[in-house]
Length: 336
Image 1 (cartoon, rainbow, N blue to C red):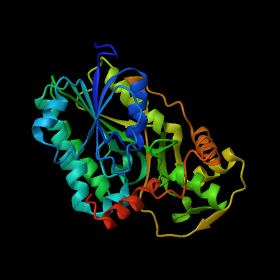
Image 2: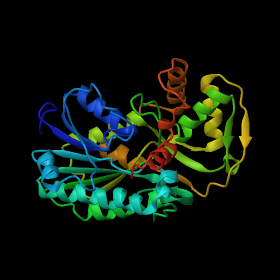
Image 3: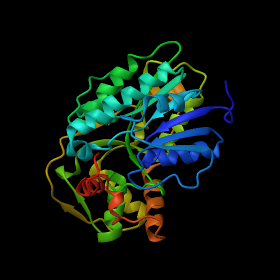
Image 4: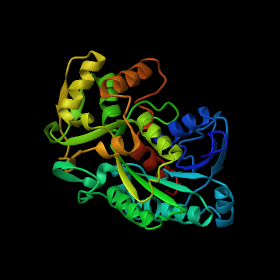
């Protein structure tokens, strides 16, 4: 097993919400990091050490340059994607071209260049709607372009798994938490905190009855790093990444957040019904990898609240709402 100092990790989508947090954590642990991103939200990796930044699109980065970047890499963590369901519907063709075909290109080139591990962060959104608890063996029910593209890349990437090329898929619960370099307020927990901070009220749809599993962004990164470091062969495996006791109905989630930040509960009910509702089991990742998240909704919400109060992040910054920023870029003539 290589030491952290000698392990070389390539991260695609390194400039994003999860990617910036992951890159920062890897840098603190002295990994050698290659970071690929289009940096549509600016140079979010500015001043992080041990990082070779490549500003490029995974779909059209010159193949020779891409192969050079992958040479001698031990682990690829492939986060590059148009993130979340609303963004995925802006241009479904582009979503499939990046989230499915683009990442399959990454996986294929990584295998060709002798990379040992390919880690694919996918999403529990592929479960779509289910009345009962689901696990990794449950039948997927993707309802959106984003979810469908995730399921397609899962299947194609896993088909590349071999004894020399370990492919591991992580289906992430709905992520929340503070990411100072690239914050997102279009995620449920973060959005509720941001709404309360700016308006003293939060907007809920579908009566707040829909279920979601949740996981903190730094716990996501901890899980991905654990997979990169482990000596166990996780090739061909799918893991739900989260924790059983962080499955919540949205109304109960909002109540927890109001309580955590010490504010009176105030709601506004509107919007079109949310057809997605799923409760997820996470015992496999705990048994196989010993993974236990360290954050909960209350601690995550309080950290975001404190950052808003200290002006470290802004709820009104257009860049912090992914779909709005993408629309702005498209209006400026920038192609997704």
